[in-house]
Image (cartoon, rainbow, N blue to C red):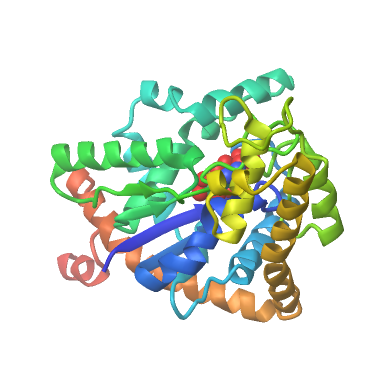
Length: 341
Ligand code: AQP
């Protein structure tokens, strides 16, 4: 059976981009068709300045939202990255296979490091190395497929490169994974800056629809979305990024096709109204389930405890194999130690 792995980092409240670009596909398709493993990647949440209490809160909220979005622990494995040591164990080994040059070419690193510097902050080393940790996340589970939005495709490409390089140098150890992208909404754009991705840690609140936004807040944000000069509703990523973003969101929410939806909308106002309502309807069941789960925190904790146990058992053999293959001496087991004395 195909093994699928993906994760989400608790750097902010989850957004419509996270949902349409990733989570929805995990719940609707991946967990039913594959041996699926999903993770709140909290270690990735420390690559920029962070507040420990907020990280803990967002990790719990992220896990709850994954379940609210439809992940079913009977069908898939859901856990928190830092609860499974194999991720960090493997990450260091892969750092010994990756190069400084390839890390510095990562687009997210360039963008986020530039942002940190512009704010007068320093750039954490982990921001540079986190794609290697992400490669470890994927390779430890022998994932064949990694369903992600297209901003993460380059990082999955790196995981592929590291797997191939490791296998060539030290013997076949890792499955070589590939990214799978959603048909539409692979990159939901910020409603106020439609040439930038809608990212959960962006400063531009009005341009971001959060999964837990109240319906009226969602409507307001969508109705105030920046559109383009011109009046015709046209699907054109380059020339009409604002309108195209709305068409993509509407298509993703209704299962339609963005080009056909352009043909049936005569004005920007009508398009915004339909998009706002479609988003409200898509978020409604997620919000309702989230509320129920918040009333039962013991259930969420138990899912995460059991998920971590399952994840550990899946990852450990591959990570142990990698340790042996790269030349690390295995620890001597207790009974053998005693016998040698
Ligand atoms: N705007 C987006 N459109 C489509 N997919 C998206 N994803 C994120 N934003 C969009 C997808 O969601 C999954 C989880 O992403 P992540 O939380 O691990 O990190 P990210 O890609 O860096 O997302 P953010 O929200 O932009 O976080 P920050 O602001 O902290 O960097 C991934 O599959 C991602 O592709």
